Length: 190
Image: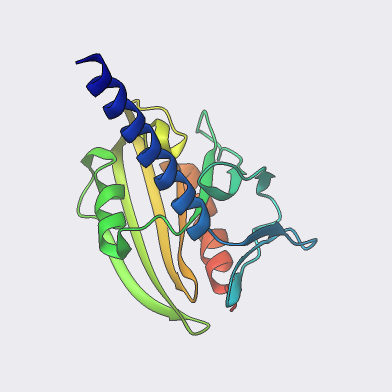
């Protein structure tokens, strides 16, 4: 009986290591920061570039994140916002939008979603506000309810895989950063 348990443990452990190695092999081959301040996410067959707003503070990338930007709080908000950029999360556009919407306990009105083409790239944008419960520890966010929050998200269908821009924070701060977010999306280039 003990041998069976040890065998099961070793099997599960080995499969876990293989899954992690496979995920690493599927990750973009190069993630770097350009001197202009905007990160470049490159894959094996090309790249997608964008320029982050100058007033957004760039934090080191890590884990599942290709980039993290901190946006200062708007007047009247006690905290700022964060724009996290993820690459190749898997699941496709609609599955990830559904996951983002599920990060709200309740929404203030109907979430908005639209698709457009920016510089020959398909981009789906989602806008939702309400009581945010966070993305959870796997996404690097604590799970806690915060009312009056807003999420502006964009999923870019790049040549090497999807790129996810997720801007979350207090509603006033997101409203103040909305035009900058849109300008960043307009700067997308293959």
